[in-house]
Amino acid sequence: MPDFKNFIGGKWIAPSTREYFDNVNPADKSDVIGRFPLSGDDDVEDAVQSAKCGFEVWRKTPAPARGDVLRRVGDIMTRRKDEIADLMTREMGKPLTETRGDVQEGIDTAYYAASEGRRLFGHTVPSEMRNKWAMSYRRPIGICGIVTPFNFPMAIPTWKMFPALLCGNACIFKPAEDVPHTGTVLVEILLEAGLPPEVIQLVHGVGETVGASIVSHPEIPVISFTGSTETGRIVGETCGRMHKRLSLEMGGKNAMIVLDDANLELALDGVLWGAFGTTGQRCTATSRLILQRGIHDRFLGQLVDRVRSLKLGDGRKKGTDVGPLVNENAREKVERYIDIGQSEGADLLCGGRRPPGKEYDKGFFFEPTIFARVEAGMRLEQEEIFGPVLSVVRVDSADEAFAINNDVRYGLSSSLYTQDVGIAFRALNELDNGITYVNAPTIGAEAHLPFGGVKQTGNGHREGGWEVYEFYSETKVGYVDFSGSLQRAQIDNYLGTPD
Image 1: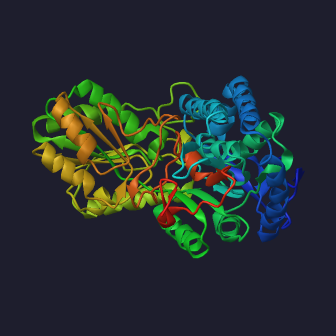
Image 2: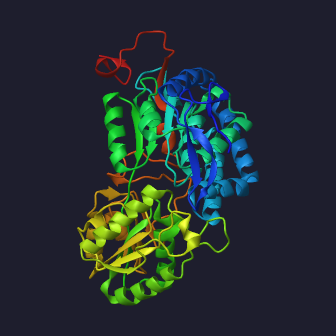
Image 3: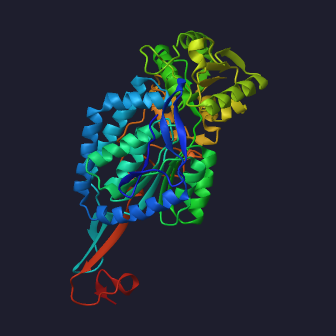
């Protein structure tokens, strides 16, 4: 069993604690991928001091040249796509078709970031004074702490790190402890592409120690965190107290609305993918299905039949539709919500258990589950489960569906299936989410558009697209006065003419 290392100070080194944890295949608990560092505060401190040196070098590198490094990252990831997907599936469980998409998201993000090296635009605007120029430009901030989750081991770290690096910052990266191997490979690729070694630091470990140490370190001015709303609240309190720049991307309780006039076959395909892709372990997963009364019974019957035919198994085996949950704690949480749903009076139509059979005993498998007769306000309908559990709510109208969609504390993604263009555009206006899909499921973000939500899903920043480059850079304003005389601005002059 190999021992993996941190990357700190331009070297692969053992943790100062000399402690490790096992990285286990969730489809086969006997398959241990390797031992990874259980790092501590001293490792984070060493990473910060190295990153400070890396920042001083990297910030002076022209942005187009920084983009060239990320372009090479995309080239390497393209060549190694299948290999990376296989190791990702081995350590977090989702099928190869999904992990290949995860890698492709990283590739797309690399190429998009590379092009942004020539588009870090500022503004040149007229001055109110004569013979004076006024302009703004973007400049890097410093060290960025990058704390990422398990469910998109390549896509989410690249969403965060590539824009941060393109803007000229150094990064300290802590991947989720369930997916440390993918994090290691990503850093190896960055180094192979020519990133100066001290610009990137990799510190493995658990959130309560390494994550907390990164968030609270006084010399890390920027934090980007993806995880639960509860943990995000703690991160937000710390960063607020320390006046740090913070991007939070947290939970979701996303609804797919199917109206009577919808294309039902298209909607069936959408909800299967939205609810049970990644075993429901997405912040954008379709967790609620809101069906209009006219199609409710027919649609639900067809859906149950389709769900019962889904194939559970190892994501690296051909024909697998749904892989395991990421670990035993995740499975136990899902089981608790099965009990909650039944105690609230919802009807368990299918699933709701660990699948029988010896082939499933060695992994963290759980059957795709559907609850019907779920009422608005039930915990099953309100709380994020992060597993393969779909709650079905019946409504009479689009107005009622919109109200139920909005009546949760989250606001990440939503979906509407209809052929009425008027209702579709109403949904874009009225559904209280950062993302709304029409005639598509609640999942499917694209790398060149902003990603994020409202309410307790986030704190207003976006990942992806053009907006993220504003998060990872500061606006600097410059004035050049070539008049040869003192020109007093604002209230002392008007249009450059003395009072």
